[in-house]
Image 1: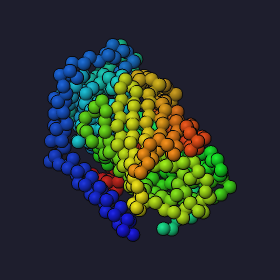
Image 2 (image 1 turned 180 degrees about the vertical axis):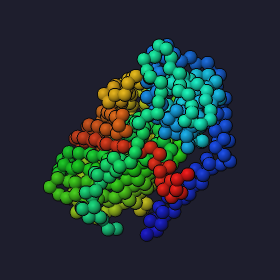
Image 3 (image 1 turned 30 degrees about the vertical axis):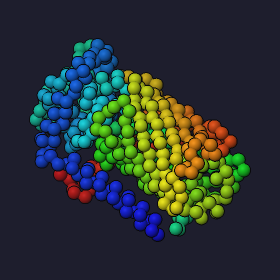
Image 4 (image 1 turned 45 degrees about the vertical axis):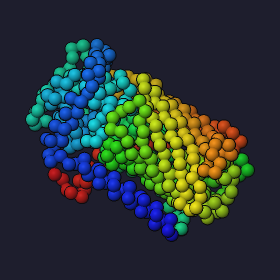
Length: 166
Length: 297
C-alpha cells in the first residue's frame, strides 16, 4: 500500500510541475505579444545560419513539394494560407518574409520550443529548404485572411498557387 | 489487484479506429522504431492513437501474441505524455489484460544540437504475464515467459522506469541511444537496459505530388535492444538481446504503419519477434477538447 501511495505522489508531483510550467507558456498578455516574441527568435539565428544558401533555390519541383509539406505539417497551426492561426503566428508578416532564408531554415530546425513551436529537424534538410522556398513565395500580407492575395507562383514552377486544402 | 476480464480486452485492437471518427489534417512523420525512442516529441495539442502487436516464438512453452494500445499526447513542445494498455494471448493458454503504463518524455534543451537529450519517466502497473517486450531490462530472459498465464498474472509489479534518450539527426540519418534504469517499488534492486537505433527516410526531398508510395514516405532502419543486468550483477550476461530491422510507412492519409522483425542474439532471447503497428495522428485534439468545454469562440 505504501508503495502505491509513493508512486501516486511521484506521478502527481511530475504532473503538477509539468502543468505549472506549461501554463507559463501562456504568459504573454496577448496574441500580438506572443507573435512578436516568436518573430524575435528569427533575429537570434547565428550569422553562419543566416548566410546559408538554399541548395534547392533553382530546383523547379521544390516549391510544389514545399507547399505539400506546409499543408501537412504547418497549416494546422499557421493557417491554410499561412496567415496565422489559433496557435501559430502569421508567416506572411514582414518579419518572416523579409528574413533571410537561412534564418527561417534555422527556426524550422530548432523550433521555438518554449513558445510552442516544435523542432522540425525530423524533416530532412532538403524538405526544410523546400518549406523555406514555399514560405518565401507567399509574400507579405496582413489583415483579413479571406482577403489575402494568393501567393505568387514562380514562372518556372509546374505547380498551381497554394490554396486552402481539403 | 483485480484483473479485467477477457471481454474487456476485445476493445483494445479497435481503439485506434477512433482515429476514423476524428478529423485529421497532418500526415505524421513518425520514426520506425518500436522499442528505441528518438528525441522527437508529439506536436503540441496532437493526439496519436496507436496499436501494436508482437508475435513471439517461445521455447519450452507456447508462442504468444502480445499487444498494446497507446495514446500519445503532445502537452507542450517539450513534454509528451502517453498512456498504454497492455494485453497478450498465449497460444493454447489464455488471453489476459496485463496492465497499464503512464509515460512522460521531457525535452531538456530548447534548441537542436548534435546530440539531444530527452528525459523519460514512466510508471508501470503490470503483471508478470506482460509480454509486449517494449523494453528489456535486468535479467529478462525467454524462460520468464514459458510459465502459464494463470501463474504469471498472480504477480503484479509497480515500477518506475527512467530513460535517458540521446538522439541526433544528421544528413537524414537518425541515431539514437537509450539508457534504461528501472526500479520496482517493492524492495528489489535497480535494473538496467539499453536500446540503440539508426534510421533514414528512403528519399530526403519531398516529391512535387501527393503520393502514397513515394520513397520519402518510407523510413527504414534497425534497432538493437537488451538488458544490462541489475545493481548487483551489471553487464550483458544472463539477459537477452535483440536485433531488429524496422520500417515505417507514413501515409498521406494520416496513418502510419510500422513493421519490425526481431531476432534473438543469444540463447536467453526469444528466437523471433515479429512486430507491427498502426497509428493515426489527430491534430488539434487539445483545441477540440478545450472547445468542448469552453464553447465556440
